[in-house]
Length: 428
Image (cartoon, rainbow, N blue to C red; front, side):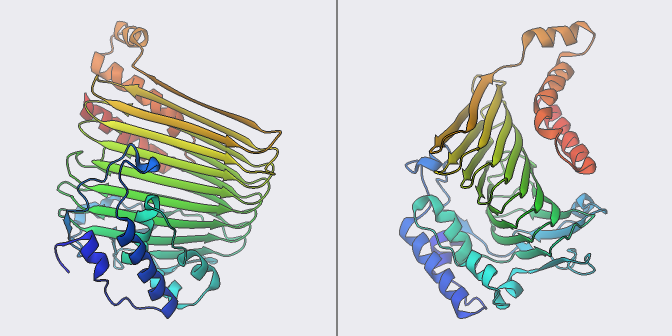
């Protein structure tokens, strides 16, 4: 199975284990992917992010070697799961001795359990070229996990998912299901470490279900060793929220050849809330795309999106945040804001906050700004004896801070701030 292009990998699907419905679902997803191919710039949702070159590139399904020093990044005060090029490393993952009410098992076991809820989520095979990567994931899913929290379960430790991408052209296809029953609460940290020499495709698809009165804090981090690695990282998180449920997303991207994160939240129960905070810092030829959508399907729900981008050299950032207020979703409150700093004449940002409102009695706002560092603020800091390079770093860190301060886990927030400082230092 070495050195195959994506179409070849899909056309010659391995004989995956599992019940008949799962094999049929994968076959159906494969057929739809082969019929549409990868999305290109003609697809509106992919207008600013090109996947050109992936179709003709050859990939290897086998993982690389986990470097021992990488394990130092795992937090002791966390339940850690480790993937290497899309393959779950059972040796270094923690699937045993979990707190009562929390279960984590390989996705294959969840499939074989014939749980109707699991089957309902996995059997979804969307149509359209814009969903081609979802179908690619379903067809080629190597491994993933099913995380379930029983009613009232509130683990003290966060669940951390560490994805390591090694040298070479691997294709990592990971599928995760996260199910929180009523009054359950979870802190979930997702970290993508892109090593030097990585040139493959990572396609991670998370499906989240939040029962009534449940709460999820999701923290997503991505750090690239170099923007010129050639690694394509595509992550997608779809969340269905019940009444009075709370979902908070905190996202940080540092570099990356081609990084895209799709987020789709459906507020299906009254008084549900979705709040998203994000920041990205890019240089060289890095490309980071945050594509967000929130559907207000019930009355009296609230959502917000606050994203900050800092781009230098020839890097490019994309923010596409869309809020749809459906018929009958009266009492909706939704706000969007995206602010950006361009540090060079060649840097570029495409920002597109969108509102579609089909209900009355709503409070909605959106806005976007693009600018440069404040010369007066820079002069003020320099006049106090701070070197210019350090003054620039201070202003850029302060600009990103609005997206970092709300992170609820102090240790993770400190790590994020440290990475941002290091990345800004590398840019000076």
